[in-house]
Image (cartoon, rainbow, N blue to C red; front, side, top):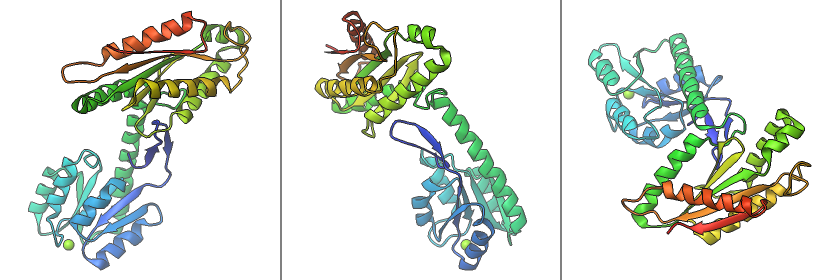
Length: 313
Ligand SMILES: [Mg+2]
């Protein structure tokens, strides 16, 4: 998602300038187009289709010359649309006035628009602005759909997608997958004592701390709902997941957020349920979450501010 990047835990942050990739083999044209856009955008240039395919992932918009030395521009565009990471990047074709066939095939190949050569630079700037804004808005919507509004970490939908994806992926190699369910101890009493404003602040700090503690790129920390959080640990066995759960528990307890209504401590603590699943063909991930939930229940029953762990048999 160029224009908007995420850290390993899916926390997104805005990147102010957007990037336009100019793919043009004529050096004079390339320089003209770059000069027209460089004050408002980060401009990348490519001289042929092969370079364009390598660089496109960094772009928010691609200006694509129809006639390139190594590949037809239409084929470059088709290649973008086949790649999952590139398919959503808008492509504007740059075509000669006398080649209306290029314009039609360009649009059929998935280009959003075309501009006729010689390029009117004012028209170019206006079109680029429109398409970059559209891309930005779409990225923002995608972000809203995957990020929890309060805490900024991944939401439950992202987690559900990641769990099902990782389960299928690990089933092929039969590697373990662990889940940690985590609940803020006596959070209702926290809200009743300190108010919902501080309750929200508490959840934000708990989320941030958990996300900062779980550092491997493939791991995911998400808000599961209310005061419940979840951690996904692919290719991790139960011993590894216990270490992670204890690290998160200690880090959150270490915040020393006062909680005088808690029976577990005089500050905010969490209880955690850890479960290891064994993904394999023909199984599904629901038993893993159920097992983590059972362990969480045990941890609470046992006095809170602790984790309990089990393997799914
Ligand atoms: Mg050309």
